[in-house]
Image 1 (cartoon, rainbow, N blue to C red):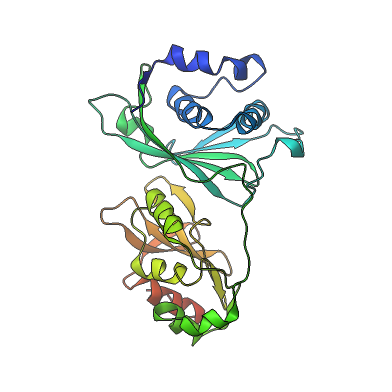
Image 2 (image 1 turned 60 degrees about the vertical axis):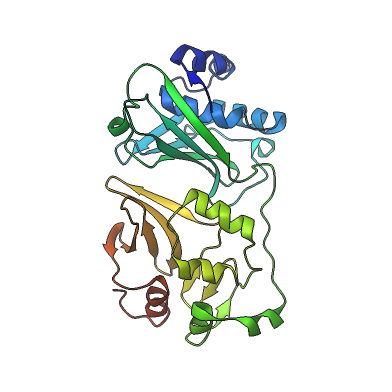
Length: 290
C-alpha cells in the first residue's frame, strides 16, 4: 500500500516539472495520480512524460471534474521523439485507486493516452463527492499498470480457417453481415486486464473477443479488449463496447450497480432492454436498438 503523500511531498516530487515550465494548476489529487504512474515507469518513459507535462499546459475539466483533459496551448508542437510508442487512438495505461482519507470512500482514476501523448485522467466518482477537492493528504491505495506506453500496439489478421469455429453471438453476427477486420482472439491476460479496468463487461462481449479481439460486422465495429474507451458525462461513466457508423455506440454505464447496457445517441445514453448481442444484431440490421 502506498503511504499518504502530503501536498508538500507531492509538489517536491514534481518540482522538476514546475521548474521547467509544467502546469502548476494541477490539483493535488491529480498530481498524486500522475506521480504514482510516473514512479512506476521506466526512466525513458518518465522522461517522455516529463516533457509532455511541460508541453500540455492547457487543462480542461469536464463532467463535474470527473474528466481532466490535457491539451497543448495554441501553436505548441510536440516533437515526435517525445510521444510514447504506444500510439493507439485511446489507451488506458494505468488504473489508480485513491482516497482522501479514512472518512471517505475510495475511488479510482484511469490514466489515458491518445496518439502517444497523455490525454486525460478519468475519475469514476466526482472528486468533490469523495473529499478529494480539499487541501491535505491523499492516499494512493494501489496503482495497476494496464498497458506499457513504450510498447507499440499491434494488430494482425488471423488464419481464416479459425472462422469455422465461430459460435454464439459472433456466429449470429456473421449470418447477418459480413465479418471484417477479424483479429486474433483475446487471451486470458487481455481479458483479465479489461475486467480490471471495466469490471462489468457483458458475457456476450467477452465471448466475442475470445474468438476475435475486435472486428467489424457491417456498420458495427466491436472494440477489442485493448481498444475499449470511455465517455465521461456528469451523471454517467460509459465504457464503449461497439461503435456504429454515424457516431452512435453501444456502451456499459458503470455508474450503476449492477452496470447497465445503454445506447449512446447524440451524447445521450438510453437504457437498452436487451442483451449486448441483441443490440449488435439490431444495429447490423439497421433496426432501432431497444
